[in-house]
Amino acid sequence: MEHESARKLSLIQNAPLEGKVVLVRFDHNVVKNGEIRDPYRIDRSLGTLYNIVERGGRPILMTHIGRPRDKEGKITCREGESVRPVVEYLERKLHVKFLVPDFPAEPGQGIKNIDTSINHAIKALRERRIGGIYLPNTRWFSGEQGEGEARKRFALQLAGLADIYVNDAFGSWQPHVSTLDITEHLPSYAGYLMQVEIENLNYVLAPQRPFLAVVAGSKYDTKIGPLYEIYRKADQLILGGVIYNTFLAAKYGITVKGVTPEDMEAAKALVLEDASRGKIVELPFVIESDVPDSRIEARFRKVAVKDLKKGAAYNYFLDIAAESFSDPRVLESLLGAKTIFVNAVMGYTPHFVEGSRALDETIDRNAAAKKLYGGGDTLQEFKNLCPGLYLSVLDNARYYFFTGGGTVLTAIEKGSPYGLKPVAALLEKEKEAACARN
Image 1: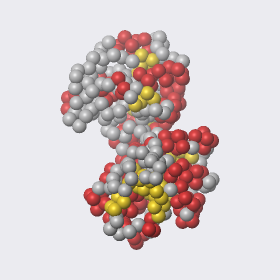
Image 2: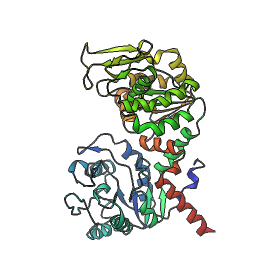
Image 3: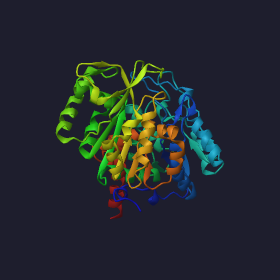
Image 4: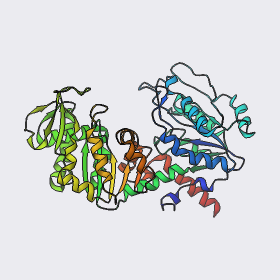
């Protein structure tokens, strides 16, 4: 059953696909150095792709991979950020042939135009001589993240390829040409994965209570906005990673390597607010290490939070000790929650992982809660540390694994999935369609 919010969108279910070329944006950003790290995002998109083909549509696929554009705007088309590993995976999985057009790129400027040679490929697609076309990495195109004429030109060129546009890339929330501008030129619809992600996002935005959030991160400043919004929304909050280290430094007046004075100062507002509201459930034992990137015997140790001394200087806090999750208050919060949202890797991987493993295993003991995991590193760590548990709960209705953890945090910060411009654009398309029907 579709969630109420999903019905507001322009949905692929209502798209006339028979005989149409369908430009579909996926989030297949799973390639690093030319290899697929985890095909989960690809696999989750197959339902939309199958639906398009089954209903007579001919698909042109696209995704971004990595960050080919540097801070100065220079684009480097590296083979390690090519879509070809994704295409090879799809061909093995689906037993169909995909064509990847080869457009000329200029040094530092990427691909300026979609070459007219693609028309031959589209003809082959319509005639079913190939199963699909997969465009090069969208961020290789100068217009994708560009401005002005380059951006407008790329939007029009993309629109010229197809009859219909489908966005199934919930994890790609940035308002770029392939996720946003394209909707101005083609009838546009939300794919099935987009709909399911939004439906499950509503369990976080309007949770059954008690609502427990578990949030960690490698930087405090990048999580401030979502963190405060989650704090306001949650009944209880567990912190991990550098976010927890920063909180401890600010609360107990200590210094911890890896925590900047600026972040420590910024965290004082959270410490002050929690002094009166008491939502943060402190994990009582951390692992202190003398070195940041190795697990060297006799150079790391367990430290009790209750023993932290004001004014003292500590080395790197790189993990949460597993016994923290046996602490009565921590256990009560994890086992008593009705909704649990996890966007957290508790330790510094790959050397310090006991905190993340203990967290996931303890959460699984709460059979009644709706358990929602952010994508990216959170999901990858769950699969690596608890592979048996992951496989056993993959189709469990009490679990949901988002494909885009960053997108979830951004939506939480904005208070709605419609705060994301690509999603809002699909809402506008449904309004236009409703007006046309009336």
